[in-house]
Length: 159
Length: 159
Image (cartoon, rainbow over all chains, first blue to last red; front, side):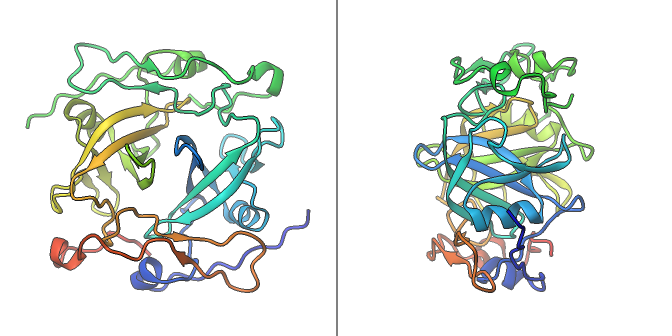
């Protein structure tokens, strides 16, 4: 699919950015904007990622989530490998326009490369810990086997 | 309140980070980790911010959200100025442990310095735009008047 960029406005005042109706996203010094992706039905946080200008343009135009993969340093059409595409139901931007919120429906039901429905499957107990913190799994059932889906592709987690 | 840090583990393998029960957060080259904050009841995305190690420690120990303000370059106990504190109901961490999810209850009902309940009060229409994008307001009712709450404090939005 040929790429036609969406026009983003230059940022010239706090009032324009916070109270106006112009889309004037702030990309950071890497050219990226933060993205938060939740399940449009359950409200569950599925993942947090990044977009460059092209990924944001493609997402707006197509209604399918595109990100920028920092580990692969490439545009990333979510689901292109796994089949687990994200259909965007609503795309919002925050007050200072440096964060995008995607409310999505996931085909296949999973958004996490480890195989869980959400990337957030462990909680940190609150309160002063007695020694080291032990994470508690809030989800223990994988939706898919990463080996089946990704094969020998490099794991995106960076230590 | 004196500061007693929570112990974070060193990151030594993908399996430990993704599948283990050790808390081994990845702080970036600025010493920060991304935070996503949602309303514990409605699931609404309230804000996206950052924590340094001290903010994460204080949040875990106290159960009240602490962030690191990039514009003020300082630890930020959310609500210290506005009274709009966030009580953390659940704190989760993602697969590669570079993002924290806070599920909170907000005293006062607002989390956005512009005065809205959420920082995400504008949506971007989906589909190929005919010319410039026009944002649509999804919330038009401010919970508070920023001038009353913050007075002449500098606006945190960076152009």
